[in-house]
Length: 441
Ligand SMILES: Cc1ncc(COP(=O)(O)O)c(C=O)c1O
Image 1 (cartoon, rainbow, N blue to C red):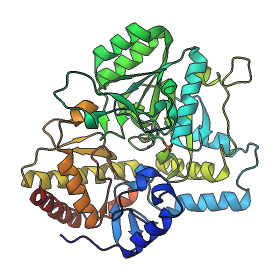
Image 2 (cartoon, rainbow, N blue to C red; image 1 turned 30 degrees about the vertical axis):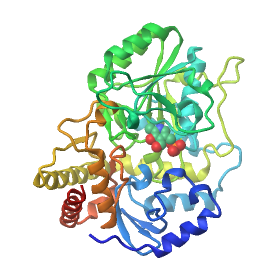
Image 3 (cartoon, helix red, strand yellow; image 1 turned 90 degrees about the horizontal axis):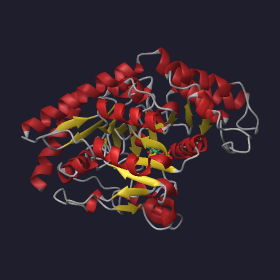
Image 4 (tube, helix red, strand yellow; image 1 turned 30 degrees about the horizontal axis):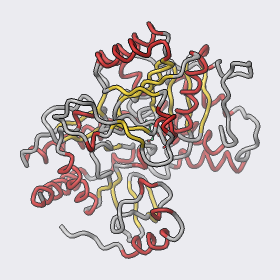
């Protein structure tokens, strides 16, 4: 397998190094001096880089693209809104309620909502509301979960530097410099699907636990999912303890089902965060929940403050209205699930051909691929999988026109436009990529 030359991309990176740390606008976009990607265009389920290599994209900007890049049903609505109404004014329009009512028609757990510009902001808003409502401080988070780049949730379980044979839990470390130790004070971390850990944490800190904050299906940890029983345990524990259950559906919302992961479990949160699939790539996010909880946001002396200059701007809201309308009124999510199933089936044929133990985690619209005999039940289990082989396989796929994150903690994202992919071609490329990965070991 030959690696394509990237003279234009490399030149762009050289220029960008003069302008941005690491030469990128988001540190996770830096893939090294030879592999950092610079695009010239995107359409449907494909992206084309500056060196004219086109990829079928299963990364989809980490999940927001649910219909396809440059979907005209969404883009036309945005163009219409900004040319006929405007972008922002610092006042409200009827579009605010249009979008909330659409969300409410899809997600029965939502009575009231507030908007945000990113998943990070939505989580900040939900956590603050939970604290304001409960008058408590502590937030329980799950190892391997990701809730955005704000200091308080930028503490992670260092599973990379932990061995499966270690008796002690992985160390909790900050994402990097600049995160004060004080931001760790109100956070407690538990492994997913561990009932005992939840009991222990609530026995010790229950009186001060404002909320459990969880991705029901960990979109940042190979789609490793909460079991039905564990989700029920969290719901019951919160109810008994007067704590709130916050489900972070930034990745799963409007993707894994019209009503998100909660519709799959039939278990509902007090507060939910949404973002990515809500706007097919436009920067929209939101958090919402029960009316009595959301009404903690008020001008009362002990009320919660929420807002922001760009909140509920016309670009974001018109995109959300168009995207949610398509998701509500068409069978786009069924199409996505069917394509996801076919792709898992073809990958499975390839892995079986090479005698590779494998399993898939999570739903068809965002599935994790793990090289191991059992679906991981939590982040520590992920360490048992052969993630190095996965990375080599993924890098070979990229060289051959299939884009994905070369880390098995990031799932494969499917959009409606993937229904046009030539699956025979994909299977062939997967086979070549796996053969080369095995030879490289
Ligand atoms: C579950 C979850 N929460 C929050 C965030 C943060 O979202 P954003 O990058 O839009 O700030 C992400 C981003 O990947 C996410 O996956």
